[in-house]
Image (cartoon, rainbow, N blue to C red; front, top):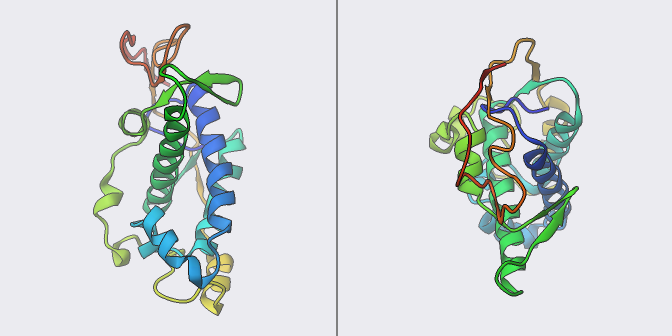
Length: 202
């Protein structure tokens, strides 16, 4: 599991799972040089640090971490990629709903969800968004791709130097009240219209 600021509920875990799977597939289609413009348009900040190839490697690593029972701390560049991944997936989900009548929903995992509010999810679950202020040189991560053609030797170097993520032995995340962000009748996620208070730290 990824070490978020707030302990994820089952709905958010399902959203992250589907977002990672969806974006891995989508970015894999952008691996040739002719698709670089599309890559830069979809992931404007991540594209300054990663090629589509290296981004897919990291998203696959994030998916494996997400499914692990252990809790892992992410470096800044990983948070950036996860941020844009989540934003893009929510945009696609909401655009799909807009094609149908008001109140339409779509199945994600075991849940039928209406509008997804990516900004609210970031505010609840991300520690901060300082990673948006970092320049390419300030990420400090060996996964930074720089400017080169996809499939180059540097991409293979990225694959060999991806960091081992730190396991967090003692978590200290916020624990929201049960059903704080989603409950029967919720038309969006997160639904904070009647959110309970944080129960403490765990």
